[in-house]
Length: 452
Image (tube, rainbow, N blue to C red; front, top):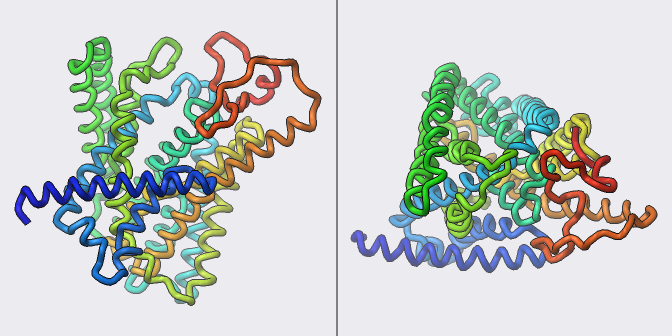
């Protein structure tokens, strides 16, 4: 294909992707799922798992192979912008007040699923049903432990935003805990890949390079962002885009993922007094990233083929799902409760942290390239990623329903102004509203609902 033909194919494919994602997102919303599930399914439908199996290969017609690398670049740019806006919108003042519960959830989100996944991997190896051709030793059990402990930050952030949880206690705690957990998870993944002998960078060298990167972000990028924050329009947006892109490039170069660099760059954006985010500074990044994010999901979905599953996986798949859900949801919810959260907030945090989505697919691709997964196991873990993500919406609805039933059994509180309608059309839940300004105390039973 010529350059002009490739450009035309990219434009057509982008239009198809965005249109199908919008259609499936609307369908997902009608089914009680977050719209991001429709975007995820759009990637699976357009890829080899669905259209790729039809006569004539419509998948290749809609998204030619020559255009796929360019769509991948566009998807990465959208992902960087989206995660940059997520980091900027994180309320750091809330995180300072809730540091104890964030730490507790982060430790539980990594340690509990990793230990259970490694134990299941050991049993799988002993039972003779491990992936074909894996290295001897503990490489596969450790890899499986890391794989089930991953939380999909982009998908989690989309669900939080769609459910009106941005800036709330459980939403901010889950976002921060997911960031800490996934950074540690990617470091562990690098160590496991090195253990498997795939030529990956040693974990000690990775830690040293990561420390240099963090120092550069604090010593160079943060002062630059502070200086340009007062500039108008394009004079400010240009340096901000440069910092976000270069930060994502740096973490990608370290063998992590661009989402962490973009997220950290957003965290370093100057805040208003009290730590509140300045949403006007990156509103353009939020709109652009959200609009093109389906392109990222689709390009990632093209590496997935769930057609390799067979009847023999009828017992293995439920075992993987049980371990993944029980350890992630249960461990994080219990950790949040022990950290001082209410049971309701703990359930919301656990449901959000159980979201794996397509970020786990990136880790699965790494495992497949390292020889730790074959086609069958790759498909199994892809199904686990999609299923646990689809559980998030119903679990969040159950948590909210539980609160409404609980308050309905008590005496009516004094009349208060009605809360504004949330993004789903119902009145905002006062327990999920943003925390009060610094120096003020919440009224009513909000005091008993606060964390820590």
